[in-house]
Length: 109
Image (cartoon, rainbow, N blue to C red; front, side, top):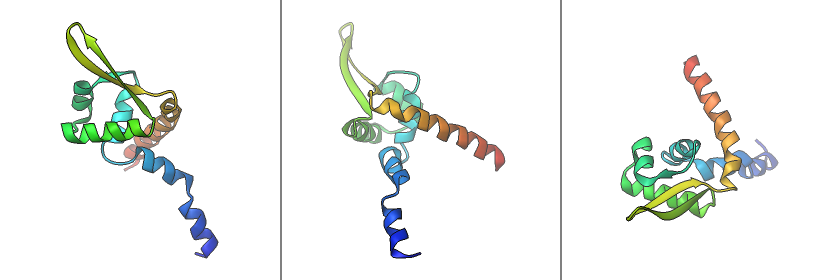
């Protein structure tokens, strides 16, 4: 591979996507949020992530403006909802395509 090809690999746009949504927990969180906003406990059950890892991943997704965190109350009980941000919604078709590919790939193994 020549130097020009290596430079193009470093600027690979697919890697930008993988960095933003990669890891063990971020894809699961983003997949779980597709139907709509969820509370922390529901996300934890849906993903199987520990409190520490879920908190860390949610903060990273929020820092990247992919999700929004909204504090509120349910009666007298404080709640926090997580949902896709307007910017994060642009990922949904990408995740849908990746999910479709994953289903197809899984059935081919």
